[in-house]
Amino acid sequence: MHARNRFGSGYDFPRLTAAHPALAAFVVRSPRGEATVDFANPAAVLVLNQALLKDAYGLQWSLPTGALCPAIPGRLDYVHHLADLLSGGDADAIPHGADVPILDIGTGASCIYPLLGASEYGWSVLATDSDQSSHRWAQQIVRINRAVAALIEGRHQPDPLACFANVTTASDRFAASMCNPPFHASAEAAAAGSTRKRRNLKLAPTAARLNFGGVPGELWCAGGEVGFIERMIAESATRPQLCFWFTTLVSKSASLPPLKRALTRAQATQVRTVDMAQGQKQSRILAWTFMRP
Image (cartoon, rainbow, N blue to C red; front, top):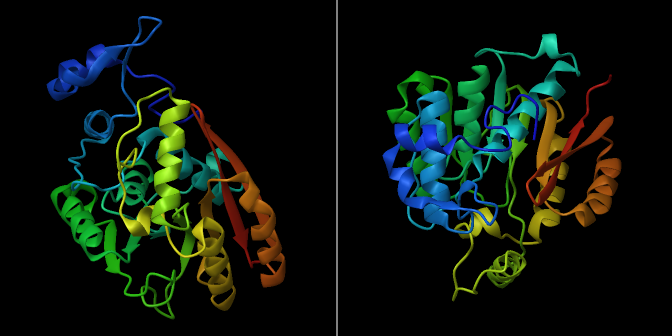
């Protein structure tokens, strides 16, 4: 867990449940007798997220039925690592304020990266999504959170295979882009992944239920994460000035070799990989730029 992550590696459940009574119904005891929630239960994760976001930032947050329910600490880790990337590794040079424009590809109904970036660093964020329902829900969340509403703009992406086209203009410039791409190549692969996760957690299988929800554009797409990110890399090469840093999460370490080959073909001038870990979940950020160091 990133040292600056205000959520840390544990939760103060007595304080959280006192401030957010709805959470109390989901608090259970771990085998070691510690207070926790069932992280395989989407309803429990949703209510915990609501309590964390309200407690830390005063945000009002909700999700439509079936939407992907993010793990807030892991999402905040990505935002902090992006801040480190923009600072060049100098903690005193981490950029704050609305003059730091960020582009979020595939915001989803949760709108979580724009909310965290705007709340934690005061960044201005362009939030894009190809799913109309998710786009409308995200816009609703932004409207009710007036403290950050002026910092977040939403644009609908009409082409689910595009990343930057249609939602950016020729004059747009961003300090960085970020993305949590679909991991799977099909609905069947997503369901199989959920089954494996429940089996690893020693939980009973559930019929046709994804572990943390999710709609097609959030969990699967043509070519899975490698196909999606390869398309992103190819498109970024046609707009090298659009972002100083292009970044994305990469779920599977096996995806890195073909993606790095794609970046070599695209003639990226710098490529970086940042490892992340939240509990049992291992992930990494892939970042590239066409700017000269």
